[in-house]
Length: 183
Image 1 (cartoon, rainbow, N blue to C red):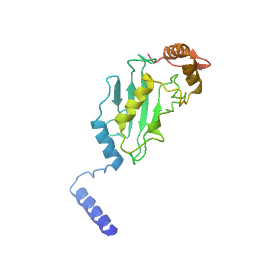
Image 2 (cartoon, rainbow, N blue to C red):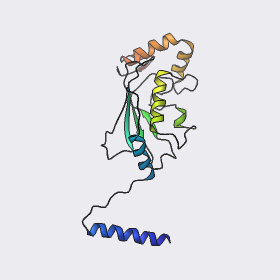
Image 3 (tube, rainbow, N blue to C red):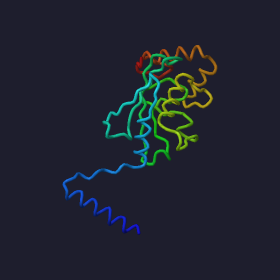
Image 4 (cartoon, rainbow, N blue to C red):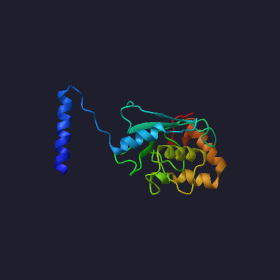
């Protein structure tokens, strides 16, 4: 039975090529779902999405977040998304391209967001992830940190944390680490 489907598919491809049509690349289920997610995006005004490799390369894109409140007010933070062909059964890989002093983002750009790890479910979507990232900037979580130093400062001395965030965002040092300007 399976062999029959393969034969029919091959015949259809040959017929299309004979007619001068360019064979259409089939989209994976992940690409179809991602296309749906992107078409239904309902982002906050402070978030934008872009496709550096062009609209034909949907599986890799960037999201820019410009928090409009909280410690990170006025900053610009860029996240890269790499979406697997088996999306939504596997969460996208998300990295912060902007070096940031944040309890939930380490200096290599890894992001600690539960829905990108153990709490991922196929019913979640790109919109949910972007809102989760946005929420990390309005309410950093010192209880589940990747940057333990930043988390300890936030927990023990919020005023010093705020000062460190401002210093980092203006392109200064926090401890031994130099942060590029992101205001």
